[in-house]
Image 1: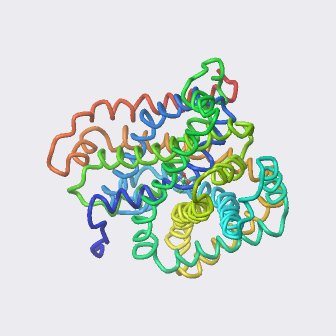
Image 2 (image 1 turned 90 degrees about the vertical axis):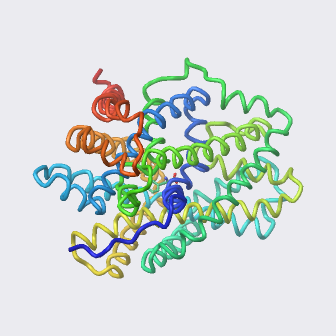
Image 3 (image 1 turned 45 degrees about the vertical axis):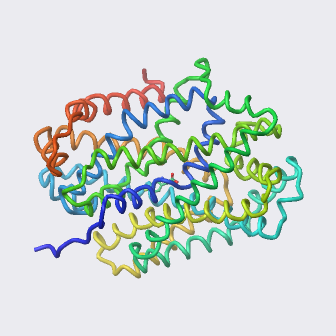
Length: 437
Ligand code: PFF
């Protein structure tokens, strides 16, 4: 018999934990720069469509798989579909993706440490926009300092994973995430009041449909998966801790809403400033690190906000990377039967080695980033929807989603999405991108 599983104490606990994983560098660092490279408003529109039409259904599916099986992602498929060993591939792809994502994620998280120190030492406050751009390029193209901070970040992540997540990071993220939200709102207010802000807002909110092509669509799909932490089994594991009295659909909608809100607010903070300070919207991965210090320099109390912002960005990165490392560690402990401490050390060490290659070769950094979010995550996402749609089926899905005792109206729409729409849409996006159709 299973021992009684640990559980989240209430609905807020689940939402905070899932949002802690979802909200991270993907919202504040990646979303604005990918949007900037992919045409602005048109990208936003497609992104929102994917969040609602595919992100929420996959999020519900992952939660459901976890709660129904009372297992983490590997055990879940074994329990729910013992005859279909094929679905094990979802777990394996998830582990591979988590490994590769963490190896570039930790590099960017390392940048947040460097920028916290720069802000504290007031070395950002006296610089002009071109000087800030130069500073970032020089730093990110060097080797030793980014490597050092990446290693520091990985050690912290590993220390937390060894010690257990529940009482440390989760407790703090419940307090710190709202603080992050507050700071981003302040940044938005300042950014929107800059001269020339309108141009940035129309870049973000006015779709130019001529910018849409198959690359833009694939990037939007990949970003939706990356940002919601989908396709990796982490949400399924959280699902196994959710009590039966909770409404999973509502939980999925709340998490997606919070995640999308932070991403859009990051866009509102960044794009008006991009245009006001003459920075290119398609500046790439350095966008946040170059743009925001300019806003801090214009703000009252900018020094304080700069330090607080980078500290909180670092914390947001840490809560997400803990969940990424956990995926790999859970695999090693469950499947290879290593002890937790050894497994954590091994995983963190190997990921750090890959991270070192990402620091040394930016091409690896970008190809890990592209392949994981645009290929691996949507691919395992589609298998998850097929699994719930066709293998678990309508009757059991309905029973699980209504286990809190009230009827859920949109289940038939959800089933159509899971069975037909999501698999076909994702397949079309892939095929279109490979120029097969
Ligand atoms: N969703 C995180 C972010 O937006 O920063 C990144 C991430 C964390 C992806 C955990 C996947 C994951 F399992």
